Length: 303
Image (cartoon, rainbow, N blue to C red; front, side, top):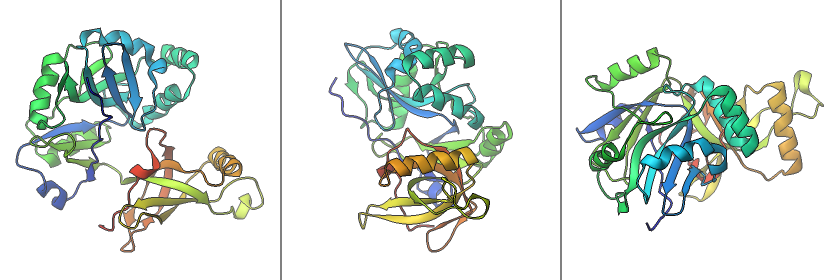
């Protein structure tokens, strides 16, 4: 297998205009809130890589045994979650597993349960490259190779509902939202329309504003300064001040920037809406995104 790290699909947020870019042949899936995971089984071993190409194989030793059912020279794309529902409140424990040492990760997995690899795409199957095949064709191979285990499951299609009905059903069950995928597109040209119950944005923290009020003079940050990369001008554009940090998080970010003022940290934040200027209003911190790289957070002038 000639492995080139896959060009990960970039979803767009739901809108009537985004839906119109899909062909009439699409698939609706629940959106899980977990860690994006690429799994590679070649002639020598099984490897697990995050979106930022970080190798976390040693943290998921239990999952390697499950891959005995997968042919050699196969590459799968999916989401690592703590349950079959992939709820947001479980994401913190997944991140702790990924961020721990191998020994600590094994102990945590004994306590919280084995994370599940939810497979939604296949780029290589049994030595055959599939990136240029339409999603419909790739899903045929995914069905062929798949043998259900305790920790490897396919993400199932939502059948018989309109996009709006599927969104209401999924969010009513407490999940984050849905993803609508064009079945006629290749992997590199894939288009995902993502509809979430809250507006969130991945953003790069490159500094902070000084604290005020009861925090004034303390070794903590005030708000965080959020930026996105503009691929047109090749520059970083400030798009938000990020609030909503706990006292612990304020101190942690202060220490990070004290040690390296030039650091870049990818975070996820929620917001109310976007101004015509391109800035995000009422932006609140949700979590650090260790699984993403800064240049993935691109700026668009489209509102």
